[in-house]
Image (cartoon, rainbow, N blue to C red; front, side, top):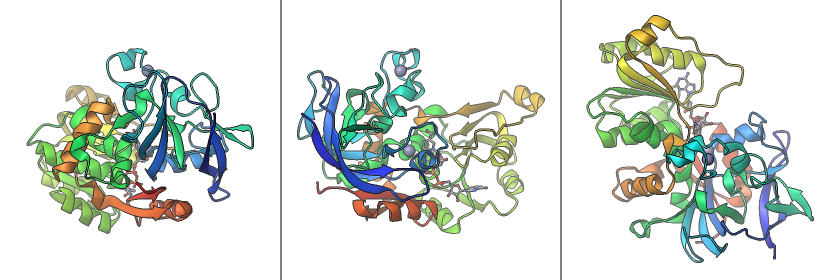
Length: 372
Ligand SMILES: NC(=O)c1ccc[n+]([C@@H]2O[C@H](COP(=O)([O-])OP(=O)(O)OC[C@H]3O[C@@H](n4cnc5c(N)ncnc54)[C@H](O)[C@@H]3O)[C@@H](O)[C@H]2O)c1
Ligand SMILES: [Zn+2]
Ligand SMILES: [Zn+2]
């Protein structure tokens, strides 16, 4: 039996998202039907709208969903009907990366997240009886209901029972990526200096995580002074407006060089500057979406001589369930106060929410889709 739903359909960047009637397919054994309560808006949704990523259009986006499970397939163990869940990215569970609990680097990431269908090519969603591209990040949560999977669904732990789902929703992408970059991918050491370039959701999460591990100093760099002020509230010890002389100011603060430089801007000149500031054994982590033709240039001697690392990071090397529960634990204890980034919008204000993300006025827009 199919499930009727309302979903925001993206037909590219020439027209606004439009909320329309759709049907969801019957559940497969490893799938869950989730009534979506809320969904964060992320830059990756816009990158797909703008055709910077190879996801077919028209498509239902949304990959930071949280909701209540309505039904489960026969093999699902992660949650049961009635459970509160948060959804993240999907993975195959059996490739060499998934085997070592590194699903963000799943060899089959594309078919499980970006193909518009299930990995086997079958549609999860229909519109007027015809297949509709969905299953985005294994969820497509800009909708009243989503089909999620055993691999990308996390039951919200009882310790977070008092946190509303609309607040938890965005934890499965940008927040996880920034925090995971610090806590997992770069494994930042206490007392070591870090600079974070770009203080959007990903950069702010990295700053909160850097404070958790006791990095020092924690230098936030952005062109937006309001964001820099918030970065300071969340843990940055120093802030630098990128319109000034960033390299010189960081060299003055940390003459021995940075232990860690984390770029979320995706701008190659910013990344090269960040890299040039590394101390011996320093790590430059990069996460930002960048123009596909862009290249990075590093001096070979400096690269080899200091044992420096440039590290591409996806999803903060999250293993999904355990790491999201760890982050929720920090959140409950007040150490990961990401609620300060959120601005709420009703589902039918989705285009306003996207606009607020793009003009920088709201760090993390979250759509309220149904009452919890
Ligand atoms: N790799 C991953 O797994 C992953 C996951 C989520 C998001 N992303 C990507 O990470 C990037 C950051 O995401 P976000 O949601 O934080 O985006 P965002 O746009 O909110 O943040 C980027 C910040 O960079 C600032 N900025 C612009 N130019 C700058 C400059 N020259 N120097 C310093 N700062 C500058 C902007 O003012 C903005 O605050 C995006 O490209 C997004 O697509 C990657
Ligand atoms: Zn995202
Ligand atoms: Zn895999």
